[in-house]
Length: 201
Image (cartoon, rainbow, N blue to C red; front, side, top):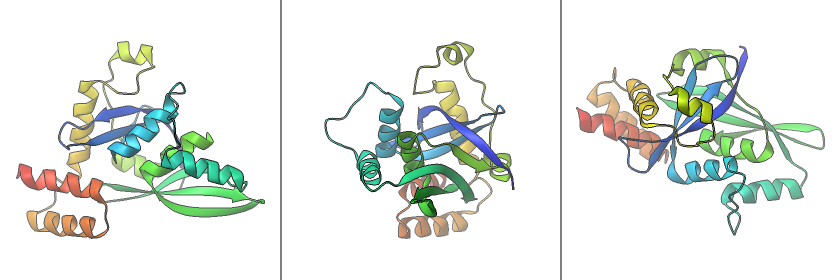
């Protein structure tokens, strides 16, 4: 399976989920976007890493991880979003220490927050982009400005539609089973999406 490199396009505030955000990743050699629902804390951590001028007075969790890794000569070489199950993305950190490579499982939001701090590239597999990638009509004016982390409302609405689509074909019974499983696994981002779909019904 071929890898596709991604860049961070921006973060949009979720219109339907309280306190949730959609992180939008952009295909480097194409026009498709990959929207990923993330929590407020991870969105803040990613936004701080993107905004070079913002320096928190004390290290955030991802900064602490970076400091810890630096102290012990561990580098994050790349992040790979390797799996998509029921609208949830799974990622791996490819790390190296003393020329020995290790693969560490991570939530995608954490993996991307760390990739930014290590200046590591982000990849996904082509089949994941084929399945979950969407085309967005981006405002040309905001495209030119290119310095805003938050994307505009039009993009936010399209992202919401793309994310919610993955649960449309599920029955209420399937949704309730998925919700129970998500809560059990402490995957609250997924649980919030499923709960919203159930409420809409």
